[in-house]
Every structure is written in C-alpha cells, then in structure tokens.
Image (cartoon, rainbow over all chains, first blue to last red):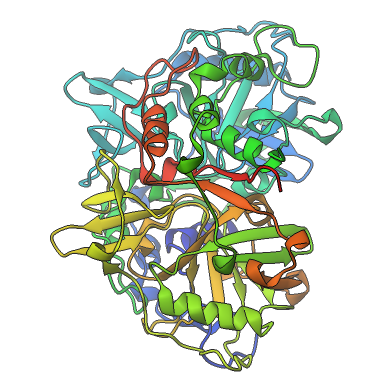
Amino acid sequence: MRNVLGIGLVLAALAALPCHGQDAADNNTPPSVQALRAHPALTPNSMLASAPASAWRTLDPDNTLYVTLPQGRVLIELAPQFAPRYVANIKKLVRQGFFNGLPIFRVQDDAVAEWGDPTGRKSVGMARRRVPAEFERPLRDLPFTALPDPDTYAPQVGFSDGFPAARDPVFGRAWLANCYGMVGAARGNNVDSGGGTALYAIIGGPQRQWDRNTTMVGRVVEGMPLLSTLPRGTGPLGVYMDRHRWIRIESVHVAADLPPAQRVVLEELRTDSPTFTQYVESLRNRRGPWFKVPAGRISVCSIPIPVRQKANQ
Amino acid sequence: MRNVLGIGLVLAALAALPCHGQDAADNNTPPSVQALRAHPALTPNSMLASAPASAWRTLDPDNTLYVTLPQGRVLIELAPQFAPRYVANIKKLVRQGFFNGLPIFRVQDDAVAEWGDPTGRKSVGMARRRVPAEFERPLRDLPFTALPDPDTYAPQVGFSDGFPAARDPVFGRAWLANCYGMVGAARGNNVDSGGGTALYAIIGGPQRQWDRNTTMVGRVVEGMPLLSTLPRGTGPLGVYMDRHRWIRIESVHVAADLPPAQRVVLEELRTDSPTFTQYVESLRNRRGPWFKVPAGRISVCSIPIPVRQKANQ
C-alpha cells in the first residue's frame, strides 16, 4: 500500500506535541518524538488504521482539481454541495485552461494565498466572470455531523460531506467555515462580483470573520505546505508588489480529465462515519503520556480530516 | 516617524480581505485592495492612528529577546507575569550564549517551529536544565481584559498585559493561550521536564489543546514570517531528518544587553486601554464596503495585537 500521504496526514492528526529530548539520542529524532512513536495505541492513528473500508470514501475525480506549481502539486476537493454554480463555473474555467500561466499574486502571513486573474480582465470564454453569491445553503439539503462543543462564531459547527461547516438551526442555513486549507472565491465589494477567476486558500489561523461573506468552493486535500511556505507579499494585504515575484501556475486540471497514470486516487475519512466520531472524541480528550490536561473540547478548525492514498492502485 | 513595522501590523489588523479586481488596474495592486485603502476611516487602523500616547506601552528591553537567524531577526516579548521562573532561566541561558549556534530542528505545517537544544545534553552552565512547570497562575495576580464572546476551550478568554489568555473564575486560575505567534517551552512527558532549552512558536492555527499543558513564555512581536515560511520537516511531527537542513540560530540576546544603536524601540497597544476595547469592537463588527455579514463575535486568537516602532528614535 502506498501510504506516503497517509503518514503525513496521520501525523498531523496526532496533534503535534511541543516536545524535546531530555535524554541522549543517537539520531536526529528528539527523544520525546521517539517516545510518542512508541505509543501508537494511544493516538488517534490507531483507530484510523483499524477503520472499516466503509468509513472511507474515494474523492470524486470530477470534483478534484490538480493545481501544478513550479514547486509541486496542490490537490483541491471542490464542494458542489455548497457552491454548485461556482464549482460549475470554476470547472469551465479550468477546462478552458484559464488558470494556466496565471499567478499566485498575494500571500498574507497568518491569512491567505490568492491566485488567478488579478486584474479581472482575462477572457473567461464560455465561463462566466461573475456568479451570484453562494454564501450559505438551506441546511435541510445537507448532511451534518455536529460537534458537541461551543463555537465563538456560530450556533452550531461540525462537518458536512468532509468539509468544516457551521449552521443556524433557527434560520435553517448552513455554510462552510474559513478554516486552514479551505478555498474560497475572491470578490470585490459587490457580493455577486466573484465568480472563481481568483481563489484563495487559508494558510494560517482560521478567518471565521469571512464566513457568509465569501463563497467557499472547496478544500486543499494535499500540498498545503506548498502554499503555506510561500514568501509573504510586502504590499497591502500581502500583495506581491513586484510582478517578477509572482509564482506562475503551470496548469490546473480536473482530475477526471487526466489519464489514470497521472492521477492519485485519494480516500478521505467519511465525516458521517462512526470512526470519524471516535477520531474527534480522541482529539477532544487526548491520551498518551504527554497530555496532562486534556481539553475535553475541540474547535471545528482544529480537526485535520484524514486523507490517504487508496491501496492497490 | 519610522513606522515600517506599524504599517505591516496595522494591515494585519485590517483583517485581510479575500479580494480581487473587477476593474482595470494600472499597477500590481488589485483594484479591491485599492478600494480598501481608499476607505481608511472605515478600518480599525483609524482608531489606532488617533489613539492617545497613554494607550501605548514601550516593551521592556529586559524582557525582549532578539533571535538572529540567517534570514533576519525575530523579536520575542517574554511573559514573566505568567512564567517567572522559566523567563528568568531563559534569560540566564541567553546571557550565557546557550542558543547561539543551536538549530531550528522541527517545523510542522499548521503547527509549530521549534528551536534550541534537540538532545537535552548541551551544558546549561549557571542556568537550570529543568524548571517546575508554570502552566497557570492565580488569576487574582493578573490584569484581564475579557472578551464578550464564547470560547470553545475556556470559560473566559481575553488579554492580560498584552498576551492572549484564558481564565477560569471558579477555580481562580489564568493561563496563556496557544495562539499564532505565541512561544512556549517544549517538554518531555514529565510536566517538570522543560526548562526553556527548547522553545516553540505557533506558526499556524491555534493549538489550544496545549493550553495548560505547556509553560508559555512569550510572544513573537516581530518577524513571524521568518518562522512561518520555513520549510516543513519531513520527519515525525515535522522534525528535520537531515541535520544539514537545520537552520542555525546565529545569536540570541536580551534587548537590554545590546547597545541602543542595535535596538529597535517597540510600542504595543495596551490591552487594558479604551483604544484596545474599541479596536476589538471594530474587529467584532467589521465595517466598510466589503463586509456584508459582520460576525459580531471574535475569537481570542483572531486579534492581532498592534505593535509599532516608537517615534523619534
């Protein structure tokens, strides 16, 4: 089983421990990291390893984008459940080659990386330049695995089809949350002025103040460090003032359009599975020798959603 | 007035907007960023600009560290109010040159950068290798500007002497919060096994599950992008597996020990000032032409604390 990706994400799921060695070590691994690795049964990892096949879903290649940068490839799962018109428009743009050669032109520390057409003037061909806002949806249309803990911003938070989300039962609305790795459509001051020709990914702390102010279109499922380590822009809001520093996107493809040999088949833990609920519970109450005061709580933006390469490809 | 730093932080305080241009632009600044800049009266920036001198405090050079990396300088304000023994020990280590030449040896995406002695074997001289944990303090000893909004992790959150903090009035305890930019002392499994010989900074989303599990010793007040853009480690928990990739710390100094010409005098907005309360309120309810649904809430880790260079140096 090729599980290189899984290893990285499962380690993320362990929740990094700020640890360092007290004892002698013979290699580069600090002793406390060694200690952690010696207690796999005490980590959320073990329940992922033993999860039934039914707890995983294969990402739909027709709703997965491959963004190829000079540094490597970023994979984005689109969220047509929440933004059907934006997702359809973005796929039209992608299939016309709209993003090929366009830049990452803004990287703001603890905030976002933004890419696409910075001028709003590049031809959109058969696609649309502007699409009416899809900030929220009727919650009756959407599955929802609620978290038991209070949230600063919304009456209720949880996960819907693999995305961090919030909802308001009184008003019957649901929306995606601006957590790390989430992708949204940039817009001007008019709410209907976006369309997906410029997109942003959250590369730092959650930007929940944007919830219901932008149309969220998906989530980065692989390659976040390629975005989070980009040089920060020196202009206002992190704009790269020098066009020579723009990072050019080599290509963007819908995974389904690529030959199988160029694809990676990813599985994501179903957020409506019993395993996911157990996993969340293990993150709410961390065990193992390191944690002395388990929080007993968790924020919707602090739950990495496990993704792995599918076995036997 | 030298205010290069202030400009950067004030822009952070504006809360980045995911915006892009709809109209023609003649330079590299997307039109919507231009629009934002044209409405300064609508941003938190204006109240900072008009704040009285009494709303600012000068950082104490005896509790400010300058960490010089090959890429530049990171400034850390120490928090003796919360961790008096750790801060005293760290300053002893610094004044002996303990950190000079030691590496940044772990960088985990959306989590931490960690530096110092990875082996726990370097001589600590007159300092101590281990210091009893200072996870929390009696809240009666500490000022506290409470936020009005609910928090996922603690009964109450707010700011104490310029640091994001939480407290539990029933148990009479207060502690620092693992928000972006906060600095803590790494430890092994034993709660008293840290001492400041290895330190970490939060470079991604908040790691609130560590609250009351590590001794927090301060906050990065300048230079975060030098840490947040570092390459992520490929080993467990982001350890740099190849020692050749370690980033060597050139030097660490207590600001008070440097000649004035090598220092920068920083002012931070007092978190117990009326201006700070207004500033927080403006972030809770964003105005201006872009925001359509102001959150009316804010999380303790989503409030950048304004820092600027002091005028007339």
